[in-house]
Image (cartoon, rainbow, N blue to C red; front, side, top):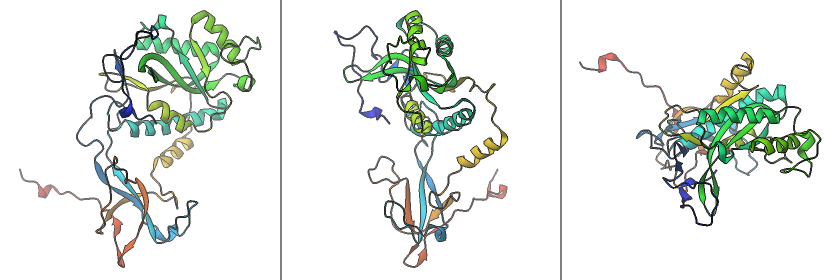
Length: 339
């Protein structure tokens, strides 16, 4: 994932192209900004909350592929608070990962009907820069359907990056979705960005349509079938664009056969999704529970510290004493309050 804190925006160079650069802020132009470039939501964002873990020591008597022996150890996860908002400079990464996981589930269910998920990009021509976002999104969907993209998830990117101009305004859409009749005809073809083969394949149709409406649409990584939707979605969400001042702006929308109105997900699949959302032990598959540490050894909770480890195996006993126990929920009584 791109580390935005190491990226610096520069103004437009004299010999650069006619596209506007990002000049009125860091990762910020007009009504749009990169995710993670808003204000921190509240003081609790990114703060240490507690520990989750698996105390089933008897099920951890295994040696993993990295050579670590987990015998007599519990699995421990350090938990931090997250507001789950894309604008928050502290929590946008966790938001991207959560959203990507949901996208992978929805597209995975759709792929059972419509085949392989493809990664498609649609670049907006300069003459359409003046459209409102709503009109631009509607036109993008129309353009994608004219190329044979029957549906999927739509992620808006307002910026591109290169070494000279750094982040500059150049709107485009990333789609993880499905192509009518698939992309197999064009996958291993040598003709790509200027295809005029006349075969009726995706690249042929896309190039002919480009001559008319100037929207450049192509399949990214065309020689590879999309195997890991979650990682691709997480990367694209990590530098997508959102509207400033819109509290519940939807960075991801679905269209076509994947729209909420058309895509029907079974109750069994929804139940499986709810089960997969639970945090589980990667050694035995048990659900993680809230735990407390009763020992004296310090551990790093600052996520920015180089020594920080979110997940680790820790000894269940220290000096013969149990140091990890389940954390009980605190019970509140109205008698403890005074009027």
